[in-house]
Image (cartoon, rainbow, N blue to C red):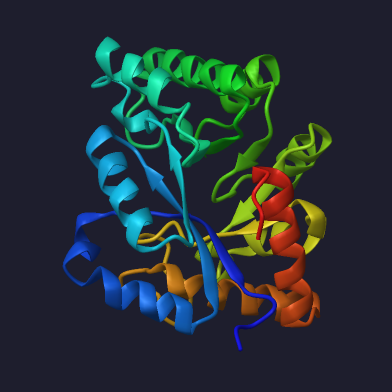
Length: 259
């Protein structure tokens, strides 16, 4: 008998080339760890077409599509036209990951902002939620979301301050945490994951990045969201089944998706 409750990875890149030769092994391992729903993020046309193929074989995956801010200088008008048309596809349940990233390069800040706003406006038009990437761009991200977003918002891989989290919660946003919360020196993420209201919490891997303890230093995979969940249960004193049910309810409410 399948488990009544299960873990959900609300942000993963299992369409990455590093998984493709042995994808079935990864997905079977995910199921064996009671991870029975995965939101796979496509960030370009090739990614998306491959992810559609993945969904044919693995119906338990969901799909989000959006152009990453680090690609802002490469996105063409044709890319935007393609996105505007394809996001009407019912297999795409969210727009993302989109946002701002000033960590490595501030050269294209204006292009990032313009791309971010354009994709939010597309999401507003089709009434699909947005998944937000924000790195070293906290205030600009907040200002743009507050001005333009008219749909549900999920802050992906949240690593900002407790005060900023409270501002996002006031706007009704959801907050997602990944493997970083398991790191020994991750004081602020741990404080945030322990204080965020349970009905606004999501968990994710962002694989192949951000691998949680006890696998830190190795390639991440969607199965490992289980270890993020188990950590949160220990830190908050919650039974696994209780947290799983809450996360399932949150996912269904946020994405209008039946579990």
